[in-house]
Amino acid sequence: MNSTLLPIDYSVFLVYFLIVAGYGYWIYRKKKKEVTDTKDFFLAEGSLTWWAIGASLIASNISAEQFIGMSGEGFFAGIAVAAYEWVAAIALIIIAVWFIPVYLKNKIFTMPQFLTRRYNETVAVIMAVFWLFLYVFVNLTSILYLGAVAINGLMGGGSLHLIMIGLAAFALLITLGGMKVIGYTDVIQVAVLIIGGLATTYLALSIVSEKSGAGSDAINGFKILMQDAPDHFHMIFSKPAPGAPQIEVDKYLVLPGVAMYFAGQWIVNLNYWGCNQYITQRALGADLQTARTGILFAGFLKLLMPVIVMLPGIAAYVLYKNGQLPQLENGSKDGAYAAILSFLPAGLKGLSVAALTAAIVASLAGKLNSISTIYTLDLHKKYFARDSSEKQQVWIGRVTVFVAMIVALAFTWKDLLGIGGEGGFTFIQKYTGFISPGVFAMFLLGMFWKRTTGAAAIAGVIAGFLLSVFFNNYAPSVLGHETWLYTAYETQERSGDIVKTVWRIPFLINMGWSFFFTLVLMISMSFAGPKVNPKAFMLDSSMFKINNRTALMIVVTIILLTLLYVRFW
Image (cartoon, rainbow, N blue to C red; front, side, top):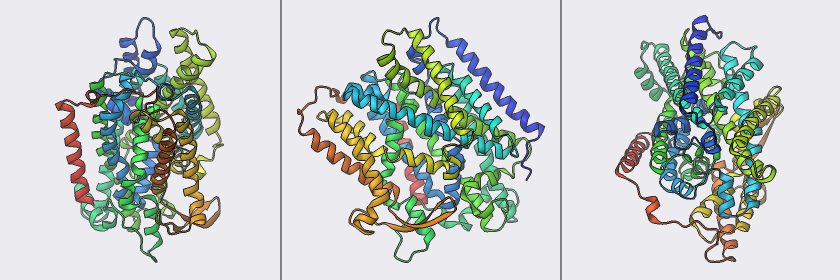
């Protein structure tokens, strides 16, 4: 259980770095145009294959906070947390069939551009500035800080700032080559991520089997997990009865049983995968069939993710429960993944560092590209340099990449935002979850209801945020603990060294009601406008037709998901 890296670990990591850097440079030289334009740099228009799009979507989605956070939730709640990954597979089907055709037919390259075309410049500018702040000060900083902390822990500590600089430099190296370099190097990043993740899961299960006296057998280890922690292998939590143990209440607050499938779970996934520049940008430069196939391929990979990021957490729970994981201090769920990694032998630890680095760098590169795209196309060109050439815009995009990374480094150097103290998942959820209901309502009605007005869109974003804050922080004290809308539960929250008792509504139920009332408001306001808004998108049924290959991929995904839910309900 040595926490330092040996020469063979550094060798494994060096091989990974050289392969990614070399392949990225080869892609850059092979696909480089004589004059790089904005569509080529920001979207890799026509360059990405379906498998590159799918791999890039997953690489951008999975980062250090997923490895650490999802394993931690696996330790705490078990397989129920896989809902975030498995519902995402269905959400990706919806995006591929209904959302992407709207974007591509209307030649949408950025999310603010969608808002400009469908609503007005005011809505677009407000959201462009919001997304830039969100991506730089929340997403970029948290990915960089949590990633550096995770790798620093694996390397024995003492190198946090050096690792930050290394991750930043690696991400810049890839990002400056443009989206096509990001997209194709993400294929290698995902391969390393999956191989390293599966190796860690295999080892974790083998250790469980070995510690139980049944030999080093991963399959047997999985059986032992199911026998020793049966409560960790149920997808649906029952609503806690009065007097229920606090741990049941706390689990339900995170994953509120069947109710979450009628509420926030869909808003989280559809907003993230369908209305997020960081994600949709991978598909916006492709033709419809390539984009659809790539998105559905990402859906297949999402089915596999819980094995990589969740099972090690359940293994850590069983080991800890049986007193076989002393390195997990105080049973902290956020330390579950690191505790499992401490068992890794020489060589495999280097592979795990490579897997974490792949996830972190891919996410950083994706965020940086989205930041430069939104700033260059939606703000700089429109308001600061209307006559700028394609070459100048690409140059501005690259400068933006540098500036964004320097700002992120400055704020993470001494953790000025308190990411470490608050916890990565909590930090991200706190600043993104409140805005999701309003943003998703604005996009959904904008796409599929011709009457929606710009005034309703602005009101919806504001109302969605205010409603989310109200339900999360004030509803139990104002409306009561038990209403026809929700049930609030007593729990404990820590703020620094202070632990206080509070009443909370499950966050996913908060999101569901916030979204519902935002829709009601937007629809009511839009009835005051024309029956067909002049800026409404013209849709026809042919846009949403799918071919046999697409239908087959959808059917297979749904069958696999059905089998998983039947087995683990």
